[in-house]
Image (cartoon, rainbow, N blue to C red):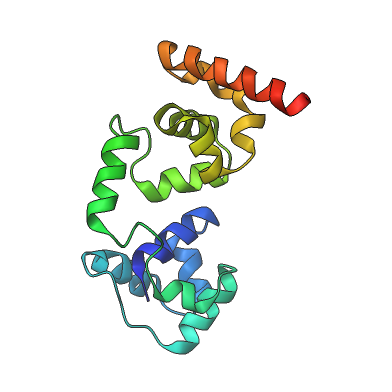
Amino acid sequence: MNVQTVRVLSKLRRKSQADLARIAGVSRQAVSQWFKASGHAEVDVLSSHLKRLSDGLSAPADLLLRPLPVLGDGAAVRKLEATLLWDNLYPDLGDFAIALVRSESPALARLAQVFGLYRASKIAGRKVWDRFHEYKRQIRPVRRQQLERIWELHRRLESN
């Protein structure tokens, strides 16, 4: 099982290590050992435990066996962390991705600030455009002015 994938999915589903232990049918110490072994991307678990985790996290079992996209590539992770998390807005890319899924304003603002509205919307979807007025104050002033112009042009084009 891929520990990083399970860690991100459990955070997304708001499950603690104790919750994971209960779901998988193992001790809390076993789950703690899985996460301590995160220097190793993979840990061995019984197929019955994997099945229970899959059901409890509402994720296919094969997803729990492989790294999430990008997170499996160390060089790509370091580059994205330097680009998106330079100020420790989120502790890691997994937490940043979860914040995007939850449509948190700081994450949407950072994504739009770094990648622009069009690329950000390809990553996070329509909410980048729809919620711009909510999160734009969290974007640095010069970049915010640029993005406001683009947002206004986009809005005009959509209304025609």
